[in-house]
Image (cartoon, rainbow, N blue to C red):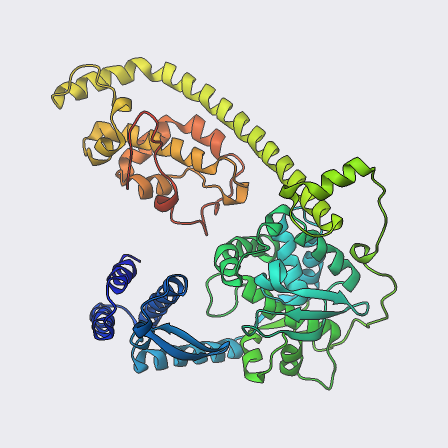
Amino acid sequence: QSRICELLFKLVQTDDPAKVEQLCRDEIGWLESEPYGQSTRTKFVSAYRKAVNAYFSEHSPAANLLRPRKTKAGIVNSHCALDYLWASGDDYDYVKSQNKTKTAEQRDNLTGFNAAAAVEATKQAINSEDWRELAAGLIMATQSRPSDMLSSGEFKAISKYRLEFKIRAKKRGAVATGEIFCLIEAATFIDAFSRLRRSPEVMEMKDWALKDIDSGKNSTLNRAVKRVYGEIIPVPYGESELSCKNLRAAGVNAAYWLHGRDDQSLGRFAELQLLYENPGTAANYEDFYAADAEGNRLLKVGVLKDAPLDAKPKSEKRSSVSVDAQLRDMIGNAEQWGEGSHADRLERIIARALQADKLEAQLARECEKRQALELRLKRLESATEQPTAKATVETATADDEPAGFDWRKVPNAELNGDRRHDAYDEKLRRTFEAIQNYNAGLDDSEQFAVTGSLLRQITGVKPGKVKLWIEGNKAALDNYNGGYGSRQNVGKPDPKSVIKWSEQAYGEYEW
């Protein structure tokens, strides 16, 4: 990222096409001189290109730096740097070959899963109050992308198990529409989908770009996928963890078992179900097979018979709610409810009320945790005050510090650079405090548990010192970590990038 920022800074300062070419070729030359693999190089080059394109689409460069470029959206003018920011042809050929090999290996090593159990888990997930688990269940039910489910997709019930699906994420500026089968009843799906779109967290994404939804919410949804399906759907061959993409592949196999035809191949069914125009692309989702509880492949297909839609989903039934004129004006005139019909505004009002309830409940829980923790810390400090003071005096004398030296008064920057053994206790204490501050207000699944490895990663304190500190604060840590699972910190962001020491009383701190 720092290299990309430096290149952008240099590009902004020149309007000479020859200079632009030289800067880009130098950057590619540096990248090729580093010991990166071919796949990594192509990913880095892609990051360079995305950054240049994003910046200069918002800040137009000089006219002599613009070049016409053919894209899926038509001819567009973009910065000439994009003509030179390419990895070598060998790198791209290698990545393409690796992708083909991986797909072929997965198709040669299919993973079985209990299809009936997966369908039952889907029915449970769509009743969840957690929007992420609800979204995971709906993705499995229709094998759609996260961005389809959260923003761009449109669904309409056609029959008992069939939906009309309209998608805008397949090609820029294009809309694909088709009929697909659903793992659950269509009316039930539509009502659950409507509930998802009306949840406060999803309504916040209404104006997000699809790429922002993918980059900002995929990891969150992947964690929900593991919670809902982790014990039912194995990680497929050649992959490290279960994800939304795997739900699409497994869901297609479950849908084929439920709704397929004897005279129709799985590949053709997948092509229609995923709204693909290219049969080869559908092959990317052939890494599973539907099995029974004993692991035997389910050979019979079309076990669930479709039927006409017997009733409209509740979310599509219209009703009249009477309100007095004053309340109607309050709903219609308040700017904070946004534009649209009264129904649109009421949706936003309800969503904000639900969000406020959640935030109040989270705040109450965090206040209780903090009060309990402060009480325990006071008890611990009281119990260890005399020995600690003695140790401090002895250490301070040995290090030529005045007697009674208080590490809590040392600024962050100074404490971070101090390598004396008696500084570690305060480093760890501030880190414990910083973790609590970061966790406050987050859902339990997004919080960090305070573990020895996490403390070492953030502070750089030696393992032996971390172990001693943990043993000395065991009661407080056990109380705080209560309810966290053994894999609580898996899939979280880099802790050093998000967890910071408090600036209060310690001055500014930078890692």
